[in-house]
Image (cartoon, rainbow, N blue to C red; front, top):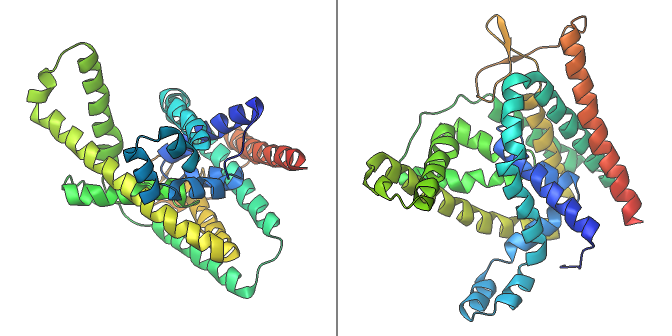
Length: 327
C-alpha cells in the first residue's frame, strides 16, 4: 500500500492535508469529505487501522523504520504536515474570512461539497435499490443531526473522553462533522477554543521559562480536559478505522452509498442562506434556522452564487486532474 511518491505528489498530498485540516475545524464540514473526494480515503483508513499490536510491538523493540513503513508513515507524515500547517496558517485566515464574509465562505464550501458528492456518485455508476435506501437513511440522519439543539457545556472527564471519540468521526466519516457533533454536545467552546488556547498560552510560558501557570487551577483543569479529549480522539480513531476497513473490504458499495447520504444530509448545514426570526444570518453556531432561497435581485446574493460555482468548479477541475494522472 505504501508507494514511493514523486515530489509533485508529495506537495499535492500536503495541500490535501491543509484542506482536510481546514474542513475538520469548521462545524458542519467533514474532513472525511476531502479524503473521499480527493481519492485517498481508503489509504487513510488503511493507514489508521495499522496502529495495532504489531505496530506497538515494533515500537517497543525500537524498530522505528519498520514501524514507520508498517503504518504507511510517509503518507501519514505528508498528510498531517498539511493538517498542522492549516492550523497555523490557512485555518487562521479562514477564521477571519468567516467573520467578514460568512455567506461567501459557506457558499464556497457548499459548492465544493455538492461537486464532491456528484463526482463520487458518478464514479460508482450504478446502485441497487438497497443502496438507494442506504443513501436515504444517511441523508435523513444528516438532516436530523442539523436540527438538534446544542446541549450544555460539561467538563466531566468521562463525557470529555466520549466527545473525543465522537470528534474523530469528522476525519473518518465523510459528511459527519466531528466539530459539529462537539458543538451539538455543548462542548465546542470548552474543547476546541478554551482548552486549545490554554495549551497555546502554556507552551508560550514554558518557552519563557515561566511555570507559574501550574499554580492556576483553571489553566490546569483545561489542560487536563484537553489531554482526556486527545486520548478519547486517539481511541476513537483506532477503533473506528478498524471497523471501517473491514466494512470497506466486504461492503464497499453499500458503505459508499451510506457516506453519500451523510454528505447530502450535511448540505443543509452549509447552505449560505438561513432565516432566524426576521433576520438572515450565517454563523458557525447551531441554532434553529429555516433554509431560504436567496433574492437574486440583490448583488450580494449573486456574489454568493458565484462562490458556490467557484467551489464546484475547483473540485471538478481537481477531479479532471486526478483522472488524467491516473491514466
